[in-house]
Structures are given as C-alpha cells and as structure tokens.
Image (cartoon, rainbow, N blue to C red; front, side, top):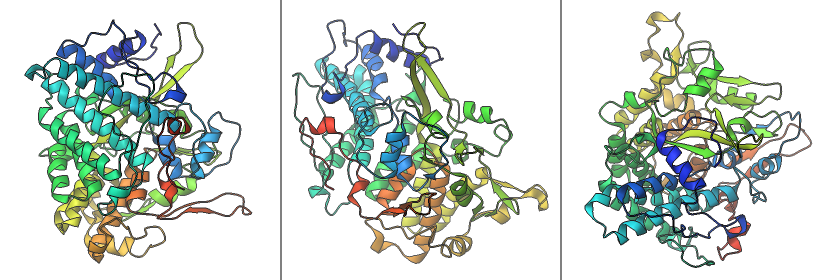
Length: 527
C-alpha cells in the first residue's frame, strides 16, 4: 500500500484504503474512461456503514481550476522563465482549444474523475436497493443522490452550453449515469440539456430530505444540510428560479450569515505571513467552508508558476483589486486579500497549499493534492443577493452585498473612526461606479436579459464583479462568463500578436468532449 505523507481526516483515510486495497470501482484505462469495473469479491456492501465508507469516493478527486481559470478573463500572458510539463494544457485552454493531454488537471482527467465519483454513488445506490431500501440506509441514500446530482451538475456546466429553458430540449447535455455498468464495454449517448437538468433536479429533491448531519465524523467533507442547500441554491440560480435560490441559500447561511463569511481583514488573516494564508485559507475548520474536497491536482503550484505562460498577472490583479465601489486602495479603503508577484509578473492569491503523496515508500515521485471549498458561505450569500436583485428586493440584496464587503474592505485607520459605513455599497454608488466603466463591466446577458431593468443591471454587475474577486483562481468566473454571455479577450505581450476573443455566443464555451469518451459513442460538441 502506498504511503500517505500528509495528514488526512479519518474518513478520507478510509477512502484511500478502499481505493488502494482493491475494494473500489475503477475506470480501466484512460481510453476506456466510462468503464465501470464491478468491485471484486472482497467488497461487501451489506451494512449502512460500509455504504457510507464507499461514499467517501463519491466526491470528485480532481479540480477544474486550471481549465476554467485559464479560459476565463482572469488571466493574461506572463514572462516565462523556463519550461513546464503542463505548458500544452495551459496554452490549449488560453486558446480555447480541445484538450490533447490526459494528465492531472486536463479536461480528460476532469471528465474521468467526475464519472468515477458518479460510479461510486451508483454502486452505493444499488447496494441500498439490494438491501431493501430500508430506513437505516436513508442517510447514505440521500448523500449518494446528492453526490450523483452534484457531479453531473459540474460536468454539464463544463462540457455543455449553459442552460436556457427555451431550447434546452434540443441542446446537448451529458450522459446521465444512474446504474453501475455490468458489461465490459458500453457506448454512451448524451442526454439533452433539458433531460440532464431534470435528472439532476430529481436526484437533488429526492436526496435533500434524507440528509442528516449527526452521523459524520468530518461533516465538511460530506453533503450536510448546509452543503445540500448551498448546491440547491446554485442549481436554481442557474435555472433562474429566484424564490428557490433565496430559500435554499438562507438554509445554507443560517440566521447569522456573517458567521459563514471568512474574515480576511480580521486579526487572524491580517498578517503578512504568506504561509499563514496558504495553511489556513482552505481548511475544514474555516467557518466559510461548506463542502471541503481534496482533489488530485497540481493547481497549488501551477497558479503561480513562473514557467507557465498564461495565468493571473500583476496588471490584471491591479485592475481588479485596486479600485472598487467602496473606494480606491490606499486612499480610502483597501480590498484586503493577500497576493504577491514574481519577476514573471505572475500574481498569486495565497489560497492554496499543496499536499504531496508519494507513489510508494521510498519513492521520490508522486502526485500533488489541492484542498479547497466546492461550496462556501460567500457564494451562497452572493447567490442570494442576485436572486433578491431579480426580485426587485434591492434593500435585501444590498444588505447581503455589504455583509461580504464589510469583511473584505479594510478602512484606512486614519479615517474618522475607521468606520465602514461611509464606504458601504449603495444603489447610487453602484450605478456611478459600474455604469461609468462599460468596457470593464459590460452588461450581462442571461436568458432572462429582457426582464432586467437599469437598476437591476447595475446591481448585477456589482455582484458579478465581487463574485469574480472573491473566487479568483478558483474557476467560478468561467461559469458566470457562460451564463451571462460575457465576451473574453486574451492578449499577448508581443505587440505583433493580435488579441483573441471568445464571443458571447461562441460554441467553444462548452469544453470539447475528451477524445477517449468520443471513442465510446459520446457525441462531440459542435464547433
């Protein structure tokens, strides 16, 4: 068995032992990325506890950060000082090209990783059915259904176009897998986008009432009630069902949303020690983390690499973070986030700390792991603010926006009383700031664009801007780019190289289906 050289929580360790001991389902090879191998005869899923152990592997063991972040407008060209093993992936994503690589962080790796997690959920659900679907399995069933829904939801939002109610019935979704495979080779057909969303919703609504929090040793690694509600809030946000967004986001946040927001300007994070940030930004103890996952990924080293040509730059960071609706950094108040720069002009947000797992005892090679939040209090808060805005409940929307801003904006201590109140966002400030900068903050164009009035548009721009800031280098910006039909322009340092633009309706917004999956019947995305 491989040696784990970093500390894991008890439940993650159980999953690791299951995988390495041969008790877990696997995909047979990269070219057989859907192949779901039945667990061998040592696997006995005959108790609720055994099923729950299996479900630790129903969470994704990969991250979409490199793919989604480099395709977005959060990146530019850096000064490269060396070669890099993921330079091809990096360049393909910057040019919005199909992925040709299969290693960690690639589209193929993401595709395989999420379908592996789905397969684990399906094995658990089959075991529950074979046990008679009795009440003692209810919690495990709820978790399995939520995992299956969530993994499909992320896949469809990466590998398909964004959901639109008028047209989804004729748009390509993804294969929605509900059963473990029992034959060596299966050819897969893509569900429509409408069918995919309906199946996600079915699993989501069936699983939600079954979720309980009491049985988890490490609850933030699982779909708790709060995590399930946060997922539901995002799901209905993407569908434009505002009342449901508000209901579920409120469940996720509780009665005091401030307790679910990371205090970056407080005494804990108000330090100049970069290692403190990296060690503490993403932990299961952090109050804002709702669903915590460790994925097999090199992102913790790649996002700031001086050898990767495309990523966050100092210029982009300055543009995004120096001046906000609250004021200009250094003159009135500062958006407090710890970032550093290198000679390559690479900017790194001090969020990620790599954990390394060696391939074997005494080995010098292995894989990097990146721990992060897939669901957070900050996202739930901004999702609710967006729903309030679409309901014309502007006062409620601005209350939520200012809850976040108060924890992100550090007022100059020389100002009178160092009071945040003069700097909080108001409708007037928002309109003056965002409406005067259309080149930086273009109008959003979701499928309900015809319903958006001027005041709504201004507040939406503010929310989209702060969601972008909050989740820099976490990939979420890409999903806003897709659902709001925002154009993306990538530039180059060489003046002889013309900028490239991804238009608001460019089909490349749906990441191309991996070649390996196409070989098993999965229809490629149109180009």
